[in-house]
Length: 548
Ligand code: DMJ
Image 1 (cartoon, rainbow, N blue to C red):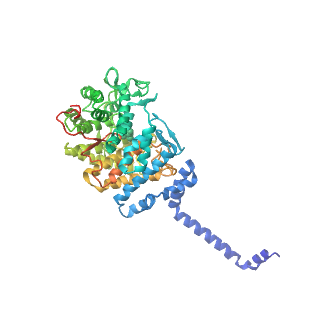
Image 2: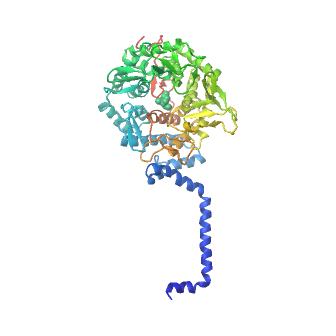
Image 3: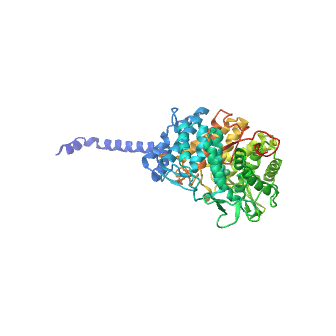
């Protein structure tokens, strides 16, 4: 008999007991497994979507990302459930998020337009270092001096606009011209003003059209401009949301050509037929100067910043240009009359879209700029009911985040007027993406500045935490995602838009900062890409002081 055999034989009487013990242990392990199922799924599956796309071991960063000495994002999240996180820690968390985004941009996309954080490479749109320029004033405001210094060096030594490249007039105005002008104001460094003049003058050929309504595209190297290949129309928001920047460029350079060109567009649109109670269609023809494809009205894509720039130009010019104010007030009444509805069952107020007289109860996330703009107007003496509407719309934009499984908003929300499913908000499969957009945190910033209600900070804090949870890429950067309804697989899209650094993180930082004088809203207006430009010192005319 072998010793083993003997062992079994000797212990023959206890054999059943061993079996029982094994069964008991297996049952015990099984029950433990069931009890810890939620945390198992959380800790296994969330990293797994990253692991599948990126590297398996990097998924753990979700739980271990350090932000400063205070602890981790996960720690902060846990403690947030117990006690409020201090403003100073939130400010520090935004700095940490910026550094993490910058780390990816620096490593894989330095000097290029956009970071593709998952494939660890870059995307090019205009080839002008868009993310770097968009982020300059954010770094200055966040006090990230080393990062700012290296970016400035790139602007000094590498940035050239002498390039045979087609750029979009609107996008390069709000991001590049706006970013350079605001950085010049914050730093006083003429490097940025010189660069602003260079890009500003290269964009001017866009205005050489039969109607003076600018073309959408300019070749900044050749000095030629053209509309998109398929149409001679321009987008209304695009031709009416370049005014703050070009007016400021004229003021600084004492050269009226920029201001004249954009104000001609403003005057033209002011007089134009085809509006509905102050609401504008989405397209305008560069030959005829008339609105085209009339009948569709939205506060979202293609029209949004028209409304924003009416108010902000009026503020920039010292509240003297009454036609701007009239158009703004009329438009807000037009919104109330034509587009405003409430959901069922919770009576959330939203701004729908009108299509040939029929209301479509859908709202782009882009519309969430509106609570902030309305609040800014009310702060500047416009009717108190603008503030009431701002409060209601802010709640709706918050719900567009809070009601989603990831706590992040879809690109487009569909609202229920008569709810059959108990939900106020539905999301169509094609609209489930989130591009790290700023509009809601932008409005939260205004609402907090004007009300001091800490709930707006808490809502912004939730959004930052969810960006960290679902969009943060361990090797550096943040990514837009394809599905805000699936926390187990939010479907990363491998793109960090420049406005995440230019706008989203800047507004979050200002929301959490206790320093109200940091970009005072009585001294600056933010352009539509969150670049602060000064409100002009008062003069008797509506022209910028240096030109009057
Ligand atoms: C930005 O470029 C600007 O905020 C613009 O007005 C709208 N789209 C993006 C951000 O969503």
